[in-house]
Structure formats: structure tokens, C-alpha cells
Amino acid sequence: MVPQIYETGTVEYEGTETLYVIEEKVNGTELRQLLNEGLRFSLEDAVYFLEQGLNFIVRIEKENIVHRDIKPENIIRSKDGEIYFLDFGIARIIGADSLTKTEALMGPHTPGYSAPEQFNNLKKEIDSRADIFSLGVVTYECITGMNPFRAGSDNVIEVLQKTETITPVQYSIEGDTQSQFMALLSTMMGKYPSRRPKTAEQALRWLNAAKQTFVYK
Image (spheres, rainbow, N blue to C red):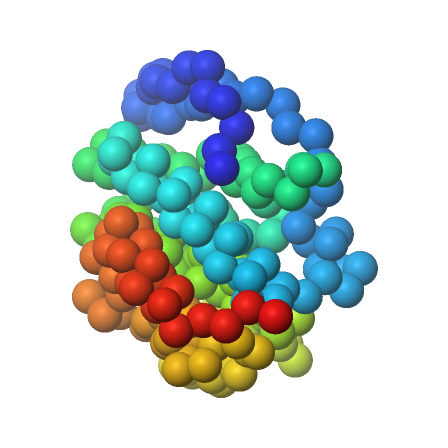
């Protein structure tokens, strides 16, 4: 879910159009804290989380917004189990001018969660598929307990290199009888945008089809 949005728009900042979002305050626990406390998703938990995340991306896709910072620190789980995606601090309207210079070597990103085209500042390639990548990484971490690109390294350059070169290990999750869930996550975490689902709606259709093979305990 996304907190109730009261207002969105753009303002001029140092001669550049900048996005702003005014949203409701949400009470709950940060996903990072829950992971640090040992949270691990079952298949049913992971499906619910992924559905919530993809529906969030569908919503902002319709506004031509790319969040660009989906990570555990920006996700809250409320007391009733609802998932909220927060912090549009580095969000961008597709096609709008950016505060980051086109020739800059790196764009705004969080190492280990941002897609290669995002941290490489390939602006023409950055769309909702970058958010789909990040959501796949977070979901993988909630299942396995580790970020596939940050595990074993605190070196930012090394993390970015891993993000561009390694394929996360396929993890066997109980109930994913035909490995369809992990196949979807692997595709979402594809190195190249063209190999990921084109939209969050397409990823949701894949997930809904895969559900037919799941066995919940």
C-alpha cells in the first residue's frame, strides 16, 4: 500500500522542476528493524508483500513516477500487517528535468537495491522497471535474510560491481512447488531492464498465474 496521498505536484528548485508528495503519517515498524530482529517470510508472506509492492508500483506508474528508493528502510508494516511504501525523496517524474546532471557518472541510488541503469545514471532507461528490480531484491532479502548483492561486503564499489555481474542464487522456498515464485524474483532482478517485466501490471499477471502452483502450509 501507499499512505494516503493528499497532494502531489512540482516546484521550481534552483531552476529545476522538482517533485513533491504530501502523504499521511503511518504508524508501524520499519522493515529493516523487523529483518534485524529475525523476520523471514514464508511463501504466503512473500506473495502478500510482493502483491502490495507491485500494486504500489502500478499506482505510481500511472502518474509517470519512479520511486527509485525501494528498500527496507523505506517500508513500514503496520500493526494490522499492511505494508506501506514511503519516502519519495529521490523519486522522479519520467521525462522531467533532473537535479542530477546527465553527464554525472552516478545517479541517486542505494547500493545493493538500485538497478544498474539507475546508479549508472542511464536516464533514458530508468522507468518503473528500476522499481521492479528494487522490489525483487527486498522480497528476496525478506525470504533469505540476506541482500544478494551486499552479502559479505561493505565496499560500495564491490556491491555495485556485484549488482551488475552476479545472478542471485535461486533459493528454494517451501510451497513454491514449481519454483515459479523464485523465477519471477530472478526475472525482476535481471541486470538489463529489457529482461525484466515491462510493467508492474505484467509482473502481477505472472504472479497471479504462478499462484496456481503454490501450496501454502
